[in-house]
Image (tube, rainbow, N blue to C red):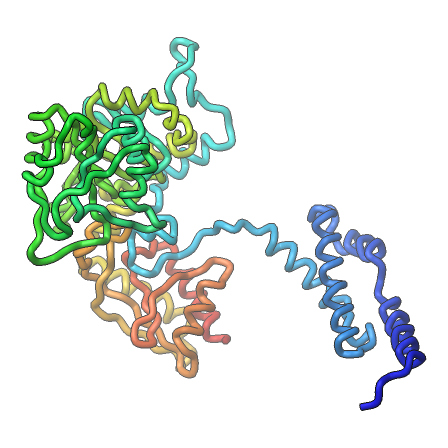
Length: 482
């Protein structure tokens, strides 16, 4: 192909400039945006930014495809893209989703949903001033978690309690306040990593302590602990292994035996419970998670656990135990960096008060309610969900539905070896893959998160609220239009 002459290049450049000159100016488009109601509905700077971005797209296409501006720039389409881009940018990044996975304490979906009472009290306090650190009786300054401390002591049997922002923070604070510069003894079988790359060895080091590993990966004996004790030993640390389990030839000392050893040598025992549990779930056929009171009764000096997860509250790290040790944690500088805000505090208080009545707490805490649903109740929920979907979509023969026995999970590192029997609603649409359907559901304005099993979409009613059934049916109707 012969090279273009300088004259041809100049003519092409001139022609391109003439074509691009037909595009409206930004100021002109801002005036049009006002006429169309985008101003002052949206911030002027953001509207201008999106106008420039879309003009750039138009210019690039005119240049790349040698088109006339009239072939690319369509006013209706242009303004539709500008408006939708602004709305998408301004929409909350954190949004509600429908959890149809059957994983109750779903870390990626916000863990435990709060009770209506707790959510209402958070909403009531969030937008107003409050007595967060103000004693209304005396008119003097107070400590923000004094109210929840009394509740935690009542529910756990501990001498004292405090709350920080999460359980990782609680463990870090305990190590920093009680063991900085000294040794922390941990069984090798408990040196775990959980979600978010939280590793016990690294947390020990971050707390300024020296890690002393004992035992073997699968078995640790009490004598292993005793063999390494010295004047530099600050803590005997026992760790919940979350979703990690060793089966077979395994063993760890009982907490009571570790406590006896610690008392003999004047060394406190700290137990990281992970999830934390305030009621006896064995009464509902759910084994594997001791209650906080049982742990306190074993004699451990401090226990840390999460405020969300099994407890069913907002994210928080709770520490209960000996008053003298709790006081050291409260006075440590790191405590201020880890402290909870007013929303966490009021939500946690509301949830803890539900536990004061053991007869009604399961019905009041959504997490506990979901975990303790019977197979008969779940089958009934699955059938009800199916009827709701059928009423909305019955005219389309491509839709296939079935109800099958399956299993749910507690999630959040709790009861990892326990399968929770359930009944699920399976869905297929002829001609459409499950992967396509699943992607569409999670991209909706109100996403629905499901599982895929053997090319079926699976909706587990265990984690679906009854008032979400109609929205799922609407979503299924939308699937049929793909």
